[in-house]
Length: 228
Image 1: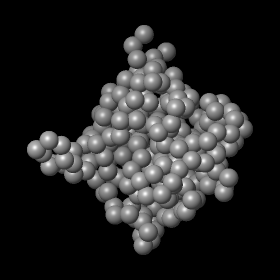
Image 2: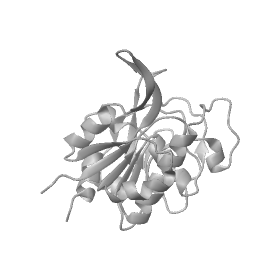
Image 3: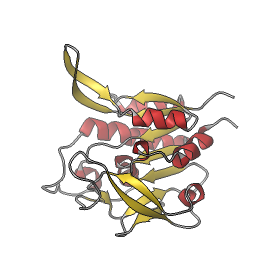
Image 4: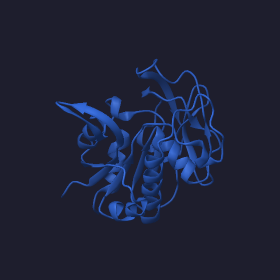
């Protein structure tokens, strides 16, 4: 049986390597490594100038991961930017929202990681807390805290016990979008996972599984994306 092809959204950032200093499509190596360790094939999806291309891209995938990264621009959820909200990544917002909408429309299994959970919530009409303390280990350092699953959810079926997870975020879900269900929480009540019940496999996690060793969430994505 062929392995499912899992597309992973990427950053578009200035980068330097060798003699070059150019814009580059970047993705921390943990993402494709995690997909491979979970039984899938990984494909990088750089931002496209034309979000309308998202449906054609998603049609060629078996599953989709929306990776972590920059803060979602507050205008996307009807808010004014807080002084502690980072600069907008408008091209990436537009592209990843289009990828999410295409995945939801086609029933393509979808996993949102950190920013990916936040974008999923925004895409469905939810809002975000623009600053939250205590969910990093310091600037450029991943922290760790415990998340507790909500019994009866998809996430709880994958990870039924409380676990410590690698975390690095200063924003989170505020108003949960209609249709989304919280499926894990941190000790302070922060929504750490949310999912969309129904026929399709749709889950977002606020932490960074690519920085840990627990493959159960991505194994669930790969199983859902595998041919039947």
